[in-house]
Image (tube, rainbow, N blue to C red; front, side, top):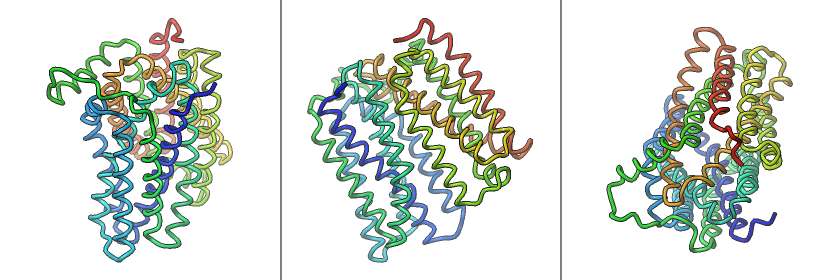
Length: 396
């Protein structure tokens, strides 16, 4: 099914933005390592980035509903381009610094949060409802290719040529994304008048209350929070599992992650026909069960190839889950509330990721490296059991 010119522009903008993301997440740590060898200062960049995203996610949801989403998309990407081009110029002229990296990375975290929410919220106004599964699948495939297969190695190669080059290249890709978003149809969602205009807090609360009262989406948001805990418990110690249990070096670990990403690419292609055959209920519950099986099997294997295959299956489950839940939310949430409901769901996910990272470290320290995988599998089983009654009768 053709999805139209508007979708092609949205897809291209997302693809260029994802390519910039893939380069940035390699370039920033590499730039930091060129300035300091203090592990805590380098790790602090990721912690600060996550903290900023959690801090701004709710107010961002309000403004995604207040403002024109097309405008938000091109402005946030143009701002990211300006930040990175400016930072690249400073590093190229020998004026780069660690505080500059922290400031830029914090700003990028806030802008990415806004861009992600606006992109999710605008999609139902660009494609018809029957095309949402296919549209989300194509966007997911482009994101995986850009984030996992093209962006990171390209960032590494560019850094080897010149330390400022990855930032300049990422800035160029964000600038290209902003041009595609600027070409979207002007009536593209958002900007719904909220009269009388109230405080951002009260408007954000409207989204949270709507989500809590919606049996299906509210329940799936809770399941998503639990699934985030289950995801992060093993992934917070995955590098140790790869080194100590599987005997992989750094290069082998990178190859294993690349293989696992192939599972996500497969997932982006099979989700639409799978959903058409099983309905949202079967696809979502089945994906959660698949996540549980893959995590429990990882807890007992010491084979590198089996582990890589199981991780690919796990990433496949995550992509199927993500596409189906995103499509459901886009179908069922009123346009005027979509940004705020997306934000409320995202808060639960971010809190779950934080808790899961702490729990994974504690479990691995207390009971060994297999414990986070066992706990993850158990939580995914709980998620499947909770989701099953929510999705009966089957949502089509």
